[in-house]
Length: 134
View 1: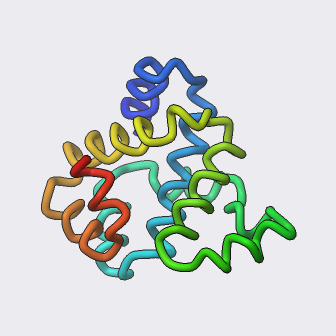
View 2 (view 1 turned 120 degrees about the vertical axis):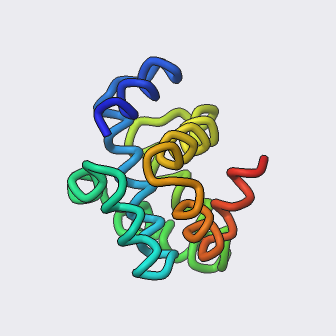
């Protein structure tokens, strides 16, 4: 995981601590939105994932106060996208770097875990599938 963090830090010109927090946020979102077996397989194949999840800041829904109700009203993938975006911004990722960060992280994770594992997860979480294809 350290190699992925360093790569993303250099590519996106963000501190490694920001990248670590952001990856934890992404992984926690995946955990919420995917089936247990697929996700568990993924985190066991990408070393350091569990630790980053534990250290990640709370999701936007947990810490957004009144905004949490608004996000809930959006529903479905729109709410997921809004929560993920807010949580990543809270972790220090500028808006214009959110999509590149997610895309690059999952590309690197796919190199480690294998395309089949990432495909299984993206089938459970269509927003990820769309992100990886775009």
